[in-house]
Image (cartoon, rainbow, N blue to C red; front, side):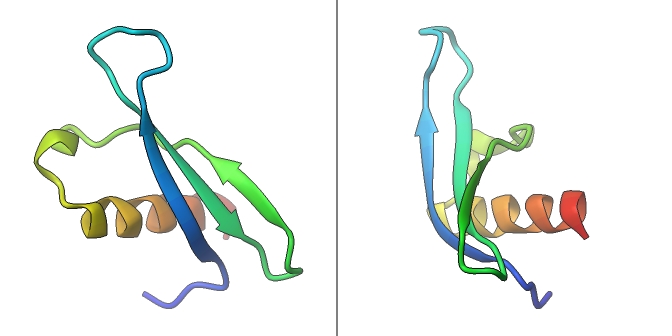
Length: 66
């Protein structure tokens, strides 16, 4: 899937010290600016590779904004 958006980076952070992790992606928009996006974590987040998490974040952002 080709996207007009570019993934700059992702972070998995535990914002509330609970059991759940938050996926936060930094995305470059077509105009050259950046934004952050926090998609809902997939159910299998614990078994995903970094590459899979990156692709997931970019796909979710594209679906939400195209």
